[in-house]
Length: 293
Image (cartoon, rainbow, N blue to C red; front, side):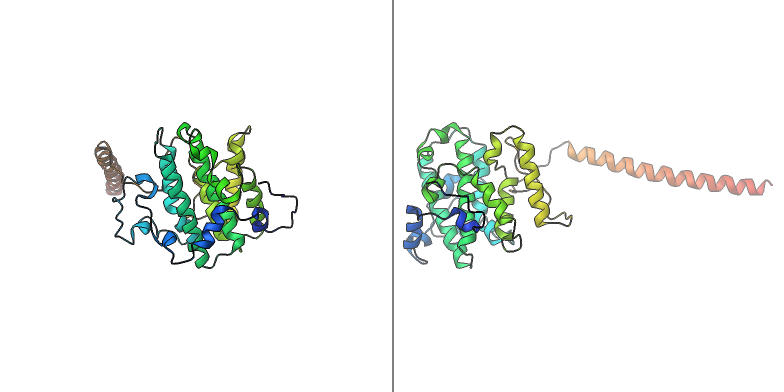
């Protein structure tokens, strides 16, 4: 379903507005407290989180074990899906694509309901869902196991918004949101997170796309954080390296680090001692010189 973007005065929500999709109809039917929303999947994301404990259907807190580290409710709600995408990027083979698709689809609906209960309106929820669907679809379609699966025939963006490609419109919406950064700060921070975690959209297929995308990301970062701060550095994720600090995993200290650190400490101590000894020698020579006058 194509949506006319010619009306520049439209709100971000209006840009994405369309006839409710089947997913939207299901979201309305699954009112708060209903079984479809309240119940968590048996095995969220097909066990992509190897550092997490196995899911326990009797543990109501399982779905929140990867959350609570962000002051932004939108980013916090999407954190498990961010982690899933990071795992997806590293997979060369995955078989249970249909099951993963359904679980992710259910989670998107649940997140949308949760954010709605927190007071977010249509103008935020629509671009959030559009960005999230496009971001996840892009990660899956980058692999042969995804592009040759049922996912390619019915992407998340197609299910929720009736569209097959969102790599252009995402940036149209982003431009519109940036005209009111205070009002749309939470969704802008979420979109910035997607960009720093590897989303490329149309810039994946155009010449000099990486440099243009980096410039867009840096401008957005400066808009949100005009004052330099170590709490919000601009960090980019490429296709081969894990995101630095974006998804904490257990770290192991290499054996060579310890002796190197010891040698460095010894060198520092030696340098300081040598400097102090040199100063003391100069003082003694000065005193001797005074005595010999």
